[in-house]
Length: 481
Image (cartoon, rainbow, N blue to C red; front, side, top):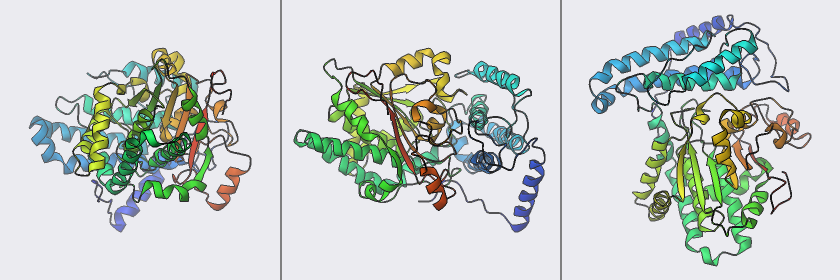
């Protein structure tokens, strides 16, 4: 399967020109330091030996360029779907995105946001910009401010450009890439649907020991599904191949922390008599990863580990491949209408769960606001209270991990609980393949041993973390992971 975006083919002269422009733009960055990110500070592009620096210098401009390519290539299709008026708006958006790209590479100050017609959270972003300006002593610039903030700001700016149009308010520039990540992984999806349906069909004949074993397997499949990340690949092809179940044993050595058995203990021992057991899943990528989320959720419901699963989606296109409401419904429909009987049956189960409110799709603006999760209790107490209703909240992927830890470069041996800085609405599980510089909860010497073998271990997605915090006050388990 080919990615929907054309390869970035350049002549040698163009490559030289691009490198020259990049070198010149770096001269505009005040205080650039040729060091790794020090421990105890927020990740930022100011540190040249960090993934934040590489992202702002290289990955974000590539993502923006590919959006322009997509709009140019799909212009006729867009006009056909959205009307002739959209032609001029596509041209306008291409110009705006090109301007945004220039702001990034030349390290311009971040701008205040105008009002938009939908989900108008401009005050949140503008107040946050004012706050960062006070803290930093000047208007934040792309490389000089916190990486988490400026990267989220980029996607908010992108959403704004479409929201300000008349015809393209609902256009998702990443839609085809996300859909291709599902269809390009169809072999793995069919294999996993067969495995999941077998577990569902023989629910009554599964022993407690086998149920635990299979639950932990699906947790790990869900973990490795997070490898399919279009943001990490800057929009390039990112698919799963092979049988996900048969691959698990070979991947076991790459799970650096595995606290999955504590999640089994929590869900299997919690009193279910009141029929109010809720599991929240704060989603990451659409496509293949979302499919693994659905497999885990369907298993948990069928095997009595929860009565309800709430899926939290992004309210706007975000980080290239993050799941929106449209992505969720599209994927379930693809499952239902598949010619493969197992995939179709699993799709029907998911659709019925949605219809019966066993699966619910939740939109909350907080997920696309500039705050990390330690700020949720004060910034969005309603959402914090909502998460507190759940027995377990599963946070998927790298961006959620960065927001859980505040994107602070903690010492690797810092406990996961400490890194949350008070964010404890309920029992938490983080499933994340490591794709950025922040990582906590490792045994002493573990990070150093891995780095001796692979100096890029923090950014490849090769290694995984299954990290949990179980409330010490929980009546079933007296433990904090």
